[in-house]
Image (cartoon, rainbow, N blue to C red; front, side):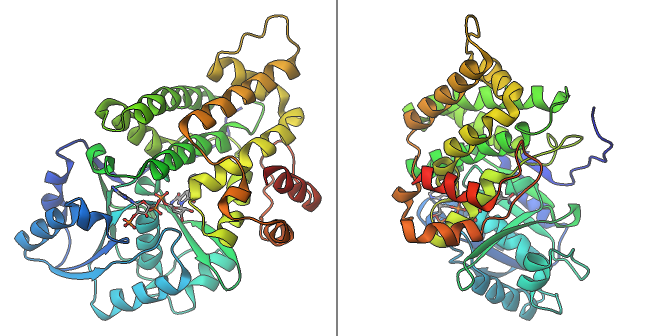
Length: 388
Ligand code: NZQ
Ligand code: ZN
């Protein structure tokens, strides 16, 4: 049965090849001081930086740059961003990049005027923002996280080896996001396919939970099928606009809170992947790929009907003459074949994990209780060992 819920998503999306034309209109809604946030320089190489700067200048804005946001943004970088935002009385944070740049911008938006240490308040104590929040706008260049249309902001603390995501409320969602699939054409294949799996796993995290018959699961099966189909085309031809645009749209729906409404969710693969990320700084989507199959095979017996449904509805497994376990297992084998086909990393050792890290990674893995099995510490260790 669908639980009770409220649904609203305040992010205004501009989608398509001409989406950037709307930036000028959006900028008119904010004051003069713009903090331009970006990553390690890809936007300077592919020309997006020049386009954005030209529009900001045309609109007469004062631009304060904050570049160098690293994949998996750190708490030290967050403190630096807070200083820049506060010192320059920023009216809008304009994030131009992938999930790391968007997440970081949201983290700065709630932290700049926070009177306490934002890491402690938002990431350790998981409190909500009760101070001034600077509005954020996004221009997305990497597809996967859904950060363009949600309140998530993941920050890594290397000193304590913790990578933690705070899912903020609507007041922290980007006010607008500009999504041009062509902007993602310059991504390296490794990043592109890592993003594909991030999307896929966001859907899995919300699908593999609950036993009820709800609309969200049907929607998610459609999203997964579209993604599998388009990912194969994109890997063959990364410049295929139809495939890349469908994937960009799927990514937004996969994690803009819509499909999670009224149902329980899991998120255990993300907890495992984030802890692997805290130890290795590996690409987010690859950390998920590397732990997924050992995890799903481990919990399959506890959620057998859903895994059977997944096999039949998403992977077109024919259940005739097979028992439920066989059908479900065939679904996971089909998923494994697809993952290998598109070039995902299938083992955490390939991401830099060594045996001596396993206990620490398990300790840093938050245990969720919405999936088909609440894992014990020993089970986490077992899954990580199987992933190595
Ligand atoms: O830094 P630059 O030079 O821009 O290069 C980036 C980076 O190296 C590059 N890139 C991005 N757009 C490009 C490009 N290279 C060429 N052409 C382009 N158009 O790609 C690399 C990865 O970028 P990054 O932003 O780190 O990737 P992603 O979008 O996967 O973001 C990962 C972060 O998002 C968090 C992850 O944990 C991780 O910290 N997540 C955020 C979520 C959310 N907000 O809801 C949910 C996710 O589950 C995830 O946890
Ligand atoms: Zn993710």
